[in-house]
Every structure is written in structure tokens, then in C-alpha cells.
Amino acid sequence: MLRFILKRLMIAVPTLLVIITVAFFMMRIAPGGPFDSERALPPEIEKNILAAYNLDKPLIDQYALYLGGILHGDFGPSFKIRDFSVSELILAGAPASIQLGLAALILALSVGVTLGTLAALHQNEAGDFAVMGVAMVGIVIPNFVMAPLLSLVLGVYWGILPTSGWGDGALRYKILPIFALALPQIAYIARLTRGSMVEVLRSNFVRTARAKGLGERLVVMRHTLKAGLLPVVSYLGPAAAAVTTGSVVVETIFAVPGIGTYFVNAALNRDYPVVMGVVIVYASLIILLNLAVDLLYGLIDPKLRRAR
Image 1 (tube, rainbow, N blue to C red):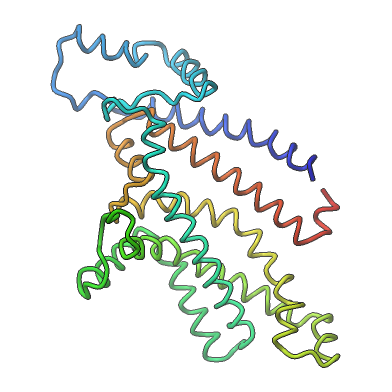
Image 2 (image 1 turned 90 degrees about the vertical axis):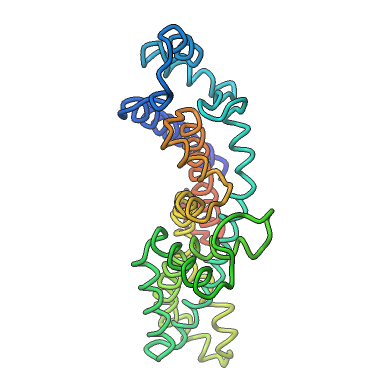
């Protein structure tokens, strides 16, 4: 297992370097600059500003300086939010983003697995069709459509929940963003669970367990859930990535003061250091979560652990 972890970490480092390189040069090559929207400045002042942020240097030198800063844990200062470093902004937005992402992932897992299991146990019945129909709708409708719809119906028309803001972390302000982020993943996980459970329920060892006189609940809890959840565990990595990237859109729509909101504002304002800092944090998080899922998959399925 230790060998597997080291091997994955050795792959993760060059992967992260490629992401940083591509993001850095895409940001710099894109039209417009961080100070283009400012009022016209005297040439001397503009020259001093560019020199202060190393923007007057050749692109390859800027890249080398940026990599050197990252190695020392320095993401640099924000171009637009004065007196704040990128690290300070990320730390300020992290609590809201972490709460939102974790809650959405837990909700998606608990509801998706429950619905998928119930649909498999009642295959081709009305409940099964209803769950799969709702799941299909959840897969088809993306976050940026689902979030405004929830806000419009539950917030504007019915007035049940706040439509934006964080309200100092009050639960009622978090419900809509969490649901908007979790609903597509609930749909995916329900379909995965249902398909896997149906296959396991037809396998020989389940028939044997039933033939021994075990009740249906024991058969499901002891024999089918563990095997049936393997595809769901393997999907946790992509699900975590989808929740992480989807939070950028959801945070912006609901005005959540998280990292995603900083990212969107920074991208619109060409605040290069903030965009790069958020990209690095999200990429690192996704790589680590995929590693954790691989480890969990190995713990559940001993055959895979031995293969590694």
C-alpha cells in the first residue's frame, strides 16, 4: 500500500505542474490585462506598477518567478484587492467552500445510495421508475440551471428560503446552495447504485444466502451492499471533482463568500495571482481526493489491493 501511495504521489507532482503551466500561460495569453480597465495613468506610474508585479519581464521569466514563489508557499499579492495576499483570500473563502462541498457530497452519498438501493429492491415497480425518472432529470439539468430554478421557486415565489448570501453561516442560507450542488450527484449515484445492486442481487452468492433462510434485510446488509457500492466508491473521485468545480458556479449564483466567488471575480478582472492560486488549490484537492478514493477502493476490495 505504501508503494502504491508513493507511486501515485510521483504521478501527482508532474500532473500538478502541467496544470499550473497550462493555466499560467492561458491566463497571460488571453486578451486584456489586469490594469486595462483602470483610468489612463502617466507612463512612468504605469511602468512602476508593471515592474512592481514583475509584469514588465519576459513571460518565461514571470513563469520562473511564479514557480519559485510557489515552492516557498507564496502565491503572491492580489492585483485588485489591495493589501491582501492570495493566501489570505483563499483562507478567508475556504470555510464557506469546505462546508458547502462537504455537505453536498455527504447529502449526495446518503440520498443517492438510499434511493438507488430502494429502486433495485423494487425493480420495475412504480417506485423504481419514479426514482430513475427523477435521476435522469437531475443528470440532464446542470448546476447553472438548477440553482436559479431553486432560487426562483423556493426563494422568490414561495419565500421559504433566502436566495443569496451566507447569513453568518446560518443553516437556512446554506440549504439552497447545498441542494443545487448535490442534486446532480444524487442522480448519478442513485443510478450507479441501482444498476450495481440489481446485478449483485442476481448473483449466486445472494441466491445461496436466501436459500439458507436469511431474511431480505440481512441479505442486503451483509451480502449485497458491500459489493453493490464498489462502483459508487470508484465514482467518489469524479463526484468530488464535480462538486469542487461546480461550487464555483453555485457560489457565484447564491453570493456565497467562498473561494469560487473569488475565482470568478478574479477571472473577470484578470487578477492573475488569485486565479492561479485557486486553480492550484482545487487541482491539489482533486488529486488528493482521487488518491483517497483509490485507497478506500483497495480497502473494500482486497483483490485490487493485492494487485497493486
